[in-house]
Image 1 (cartoon, one colour):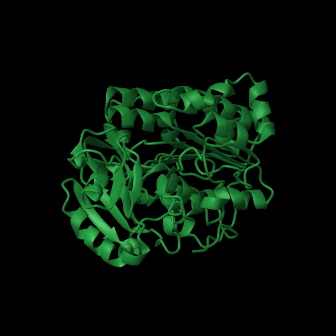
Image 2 (cartoon, one colour; image 1 turned 90 degrees about the horizontal axis):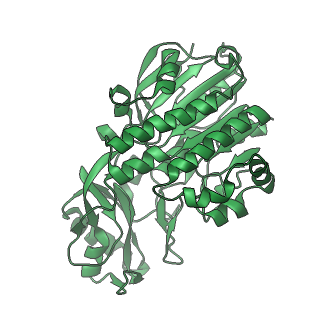
Length: 443
């Protein structure tokens, strides 16, 4: 798809602020217990989608990548939050960017790359998969580890935020559960500062703690409602940094989320079954020492990596039927099914597994290989990662400001529609995307 913007009769949009509220499910929008006055005031002057369908797996890294590239994981290359490195045999947690710069993960151009290439000023605070992103002029990436914060953030950014008196020496500590609401407080301050001082034409901001509190306490829990109200307050502080009258004059605000949430009552431990089949070995402490096949969880989904090249085809076939019979498993898909799921095949992207599993409602996956039972108590009370057709996995979309209709409701849109819509607002050319321009949102 090619988004042609030359002929559009579009009001002059000088600035787009794209804000992600991680884990804000679409079902919360009609829940009267949700107190989000900032978001509701924006909705009064803009448009809200009934639902935004995310990608599979419905986790933070793949969906955020789709929202800025306009394509699915088979094209942009970010296939999961957690993957197995086939060469080292070790699992890799991509969240927090501890390992790879963005150009090692992203295989498709982003809307901020295109904006930057045309001379637009770009900035991001806490946006996933942006470590050392060349298309961002100011960037405080989404990190979890203090060492990575300090070594991979540009020194000028680090000095500038430190000079403001922000507690950047505590960001690693505050990135751990359950302290992420403290991190979101810093994100709000940093983003407000960037808007005031650097005035970017495209600004990306990400708030995490609503996701974190739903993992810990479950969706629709008192803690989840508190976290949603808190991130709404943080978002209000960011928007207060815009010049007076900006939304009437030259600015569009787009608020999105990456996925919804499901409660989890039981955890499926696929590696226990693989161990029982003789395909992996475990030390007493639980560390996997040898494996011909290994499972890596992504909460409501996960991948089996077959590491025995000589016996790979037959082992994949045997495991597909074996694992489909496990209690709590909703579906198992092989490489021939990946195109329909929007996923790459392992030969093209080795971060992808040889089988993909999805958990049934009420279940999520774990990585533990110890014990005799493949079912156990869940690590988290809330999870996501399931296929995007699940009703409660639906994400959120709102747009308000210049170029956007007022007081309108949209139907269902896709996460990959965000990038071409943002590009359209900024009158940029974003080539070869799968997402569609959300024309019903625009004047």
